[in-house]
Amino acid sequence: MTTNGKSENFADLLDQYAYAEPTRGQILSATVIAARRDEVIVDVGLKRDAVVRRADLDRLDRSYVESLKPGDEVQVYVMYPDTEDGDLVVSLNKALEREDWRRAQELMETDQVTEGVVIDSNKGGMLVQFGRLVGFIPNSHIESVTPTSREGRVKEIKDSMVGRVLQLKVIQVEAERNRLIMSERAARRATRSERLSELKVGSVVTGRVVNITDFGVFVDIGGVDGMVHISNLDHRHVTHPSDVVSIGDEMTVRIDAVDVERERIALNRKATLPDPWETFTAQYRGGDLFEGVVTNVVDFGVFVASDSGAQGLVHATRMNSLKATPRDMFKEGDRVIVKIVGMDIDRKHIELSIDDITEDERAAFLAKQNRPSEPEA
Image (cartoon, rainbow, N blue to C red; front, side):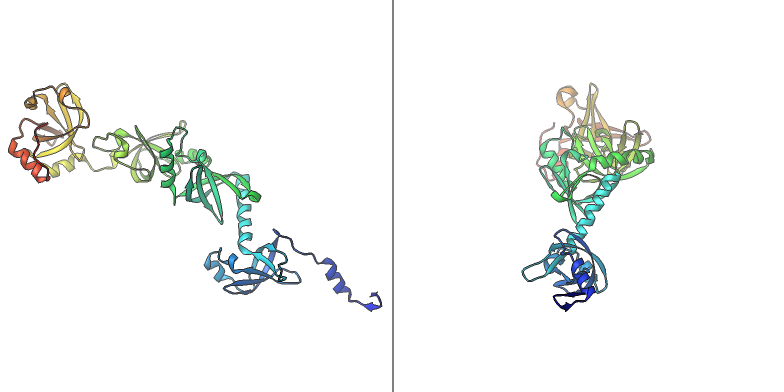
């Protein structure tokens, strides 16, 4: 073939005709030609090589960058098709992000459960790391946040979850808007039934406190939440669950009941704690004094619990010095110094007294605790 009297090579003409400039956002297959600390040169099958700049390499794991060597096959994202210097600038990081977007889309379409690490929280929800992307969990999709949760409690719950790995479902993917929405609540629903069927009544498991209410605490035991009623939190008298545990605390509990249909699990922390009677008898003998908490007031006296949780009765006839009825003098939660006047080890029965405490005994007890002498209750 001749043009304007000059002969041209047919292969050169075909190559010029078939060549197309890359466009921003295009994903290209590439082969590493040279890998240096400040840049990576790749062959993208065009007339010119492409360059991955230092700023892009700094966004990648150092171990990944150091592993790159000539001949490696990689995917790159076209950032700038033609700079003022004539460079074709591509990005390894953006290409890897695109793969994460593709994976997120697939997870949403197949309704699969995945994992993400909570990296931060804000007023509207929590941020989670998903590969090289940051996903968002709205407050309404956080399992332990309920519509009735107080604002301060919501913040406390979210702050305690930073650093935790959560089971999540992808519910919205918009790569163009950099929008990745995830749901812990949806993932928990998907795994709850399966997990409930695996639980065995009587088994002891370890979980994490995710919510505290006036009547008990909710504990995550591996994908499902169970409730420890306030009466099963401790052998000691508990005025409020927050006096015993905090959100985020790890807790060992016994599974007392599982209702699969109603999705309810009854847990028991008290059952996993040391026997209060054994602790009490190892610490005290008849005639000893201790300061306990009033757990119940009845017409015939008051029940007082030691620090271990073992309870004894101060009969009304052993508090005559107070010159008043038990209900007039005491209420639940009051602290009172008592004397052990009887112990039945077989029946686990403790008999206590207020009247039998002498002034010298009371003074010596308070002095031992570095407390000033004080009048009787």
